[in-house]
Length: 163
Image (cartoon, one colour):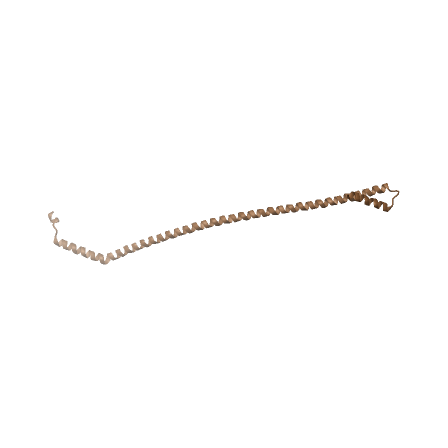
């Protein structure tokens, strides 16, 4: 067992030679591709991080734009609603004014028609009264009548009726 614990120079020499050859072979053929793959992976990860940050910033900007557009749309809708309400109120007032004006015109026309009909009725009553008075006068004065006397009596009766 002691022999195993004692280092053998030949074994140490060949171990060092084998390790050096292995290190040289790895350096020439394997380390460059491994290091370039690791560097490419690092670069890809860094680019992905930058792209993710850019996408995050862009999404945040789009979200802010959408919020602003939503606020603007809400304000515009509220403004349109207010304008429509004002227009409806003005239209309502105009309709009421037109209706009142038409009602006043109808009342005025009705009063005029009533006045005209009243005047016609009064004229008709006067004519009937005059005819009746003339007939009564003819009957009273039937025997001594002459035309001028009858005419004067009728005119006098009409004057009294007018008063």
